[in-house]
Image 1 (cartoon, one colour):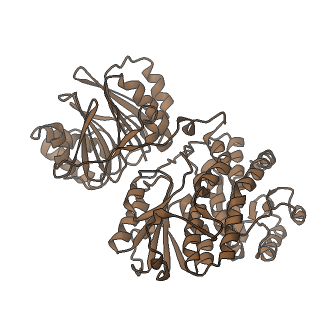
Image 2 (cartoon, helix red, strand yellow):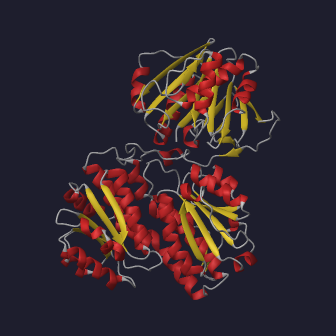
Image 3 (tube, rainbow, N blue to C red):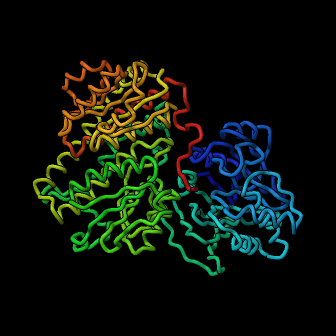
Length: 610
């Protein structure tokens, strides 16, 4: 969950490192640091807190040099302070690292007992730096020492190493944590995220697990862990600089919410067949005959993506007649799921394509003989390369830590998968055309909600004093409630939970009084009357109500003055539409409460560790 950047070339390294770290700060902002190698000497500077603290400190240092590495940290081992910040330096070796060294305690003990090493931080990364330094005493060149050290390591790493004795190279290594090489005629850029290097080059090579790269100015070599040369195809990054800038908005979160009419149109473009009432997804890599034998979808995801998966469960089962299980990756990967591999299709959902628990779950599925699909937003990500097939979300870079437009795209991607498989099974052409019509209407309907954001802002201002909230919904509105609750937690720091509305009376109703905020997602649908009954239960306990309802449903005004509406719409797309007001509500609540909207405390965007 940390950001890594490296540069070796003919230009000054420091500006490249700082601009790269700024692009990646959403990956971690507990501390930041840089190391510049110049004239056979490495200068390390690091600061606790956000990147601005490091940038301020650098104003008093004249760091020149054409080789450097940098890091922005989300703390795992050791509290967020300057001592634990990266880079870590011991003697002539300097290291930045993303991941977790699981056997670091045993390695640390041996380094102290056998080699007299003095380890001062609480991090696993400093231990790794010392291990590499010890290996340089008997192994040369640097890449051989790094490889010898990593063969003793258990865990994950995206790793950059400098050695003052070999100032013409940076050694990079990867296992379970993303790294890419940016290629230029006179320079090599190394980063954990394409956003860090896109302003310098659009030519990249994605490293695979258990590979090591030796990088010099304008050239590189990649080896496997048996020191055998590996060939990689150069690829092109297709990200525009303007996509990772605020474009006049106060926050990335608002920008990304407002982009959704466009991102919805992008994910649908060229994939709908209105004549046949189906979708065309060539990337699934599945023979139509395979669909007939399917008995189960196993969806695995984490956080917001898991709630998109639960929405998908409701929709996919209706479309295909196939049972759907949804599980978070941190649970699926460690239990013994009962799976019929030939008739169960694994669907892995991840914005970044680098989520550690989701990746491990995908690997477990493949070990069990399952076919896997990835619903991923990042081209070239680990998950996108590991699965058998999939759907790119085309939502564009998502910089704010709280995910919004990716959630919407994930639900739509699930619908596209369901439409293609459903039409091969039970879904009629008429039903398929109805779903397509609903999807085609979505961008305009979402825009209608966004155009009323000032009304939602006013509601948030009125309710911003609440420190506790309960979100309720039925059927597909239940996972919408879960996601709305998560957004409020993440951004506004409001203690919030979500319940299926019919389950509320089995415990959660005890919380409700005149000071308790209850957010009820209640659009007009088949369960509207049932939901109204639950709404009456909340009113009887004098709960403070905020409602998400259908435009024109005047009866809701009798329950609350706080009503956010969505257009009258198809049940197929109601979950997507109902989520948009909740995104805006969470955003404006966070603003009213004075929070750091794009970089909420304790969070990071791409969760690449367990």
